[in-house]
Length: 143
Length: 136
Image (cartoon, rainbow over all chains, first blue to last red; front, side):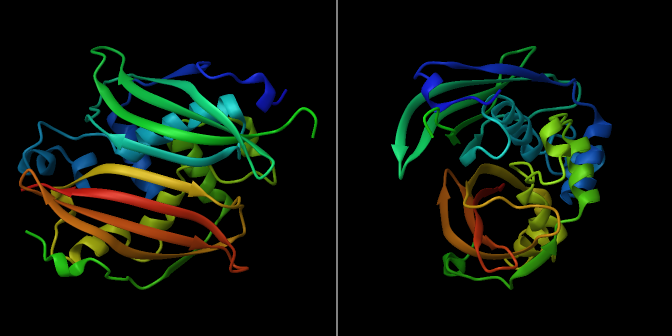
């Protein structure tokens, strides 16, 4: 059943999703799938040479997880805008939790637009991985 | 320090046809189990634009090299997408990237890449803004 514009209120929480633990092999797979072969995501020696403790996850992989939370809630294809700020690194072994909240809704050119904010945090230490905002277009009941 | 003159630089456009296998690979790599993406007429997932950037003509690594920056020394600060129309398997997407901003803050260089994507009909489908930090 689709989520309708009329059924969403400011302050509603999106069902959170949990992803992980993120393993080294996940970063290898994401490198291949995305084409982002920056070796700081897959080669520990190079990550250390540039001053990191070890390999780190692609920020875009964490953004993809956040997008899955929005898709599961609003439906595939609902996104109109999706912006994130990467605020912390994610390392192999970590599990992350995606959380979101509705911050407002408005009609724009007859479309029901819902705005929200989201956060992805490390499950173990609560560290913030990214913060973002999004807008989705939802179907109308009377349409 | 980056030359502030690079602001406004426009890169060569790049194109890529969306293949079903590439979309499936991306869904598997991101652990995306949403059944709606397995339907025949499904759109591509929200962050699939990163595939165009990296698989179609050099991607970010080449864009940074043209500025004299080694990709191993960058971090991704912000990413933004504006979705204008759905993209499907079989569409050919062409992206044009420009450097929309360059500045220095706290001793680090920030470079903002803005990319507009169109489909094979010339319709705008996606706007992208990526903010990159160059580490010391």
